[in-house]
Image 1: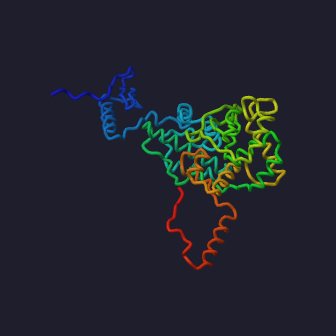
Image 2: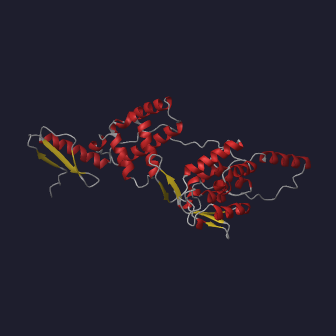
Image 3: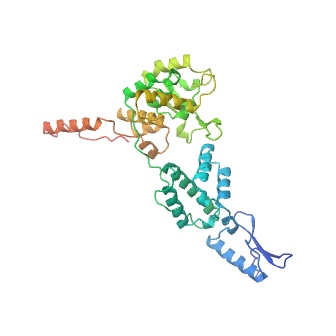
Length: 374
């Protein structure tokens, strides 16, 4: 019977102590986190590691002792799914909200430690949104640590702590949108109209090329989004987050005169939105111009609320959820549903129709079948 293959290696060091090592699940040789006084002690440690590996319970003790600061920085650097703007946000939140955890080893970040950090963060001066972002980042990093066998379980177990609950957004009326368009500097009118009536985000608006506006077909094509870093001011184009984000949106016909005027007066040969110097327009320029117009009109809406307004108005026309998802560029139903609202006055119309039905006192007018739009 062949001899059982030995798991791991033990070698004697010049100091007289023994070092144990083995090939980990990642295919790399890993040393024990400490040396051993005798060869027997080193062999016992290897036996324990082999048993843990067979049960799927082995942990990389050396990696588990790495400070959260270093591991989180590597996560942001090496994860291809982390965009530059999100990385910038996470780095800022590490400085502002995660200081208490930065120097702790990964294995020392336990559920009680996370709960204490979260309680203290909520009691501090930080905003709830940035604390939610910090928690989601912490949870993502610790999930990676679990996958790397640095920890046995993710310690982020606070229910709802990372939820970005959609707050009720203010929507503008069609009259208020018209007032904003009249009040804003003409160079920015098309930006307001595309946000309010086509549901484009600010980054999608300023990312438009002139060729993305197909006036004969009555379409605006969203092919990219313009992103700007807060720390450095660097601006760059990137693909939308999902394939659904690349989309065509039908332009309401009443926008045509404004868009034609914009193409003739304010666009460059290449880009739809440019500044007075002819360079790509900055998102902050749109924001500042919008704030000035908003203050002049006295409407309490944000630029992003215009996108919300557009979807609400589209919903009021009878658009289905699938229609709204396409216009929004959302791949998930949950993301699109948050933009569905009852338009002011619509519920009163429903109530009035119910009273008319009651007055007739007959079910004869009811349809034989009901078609439900999804």
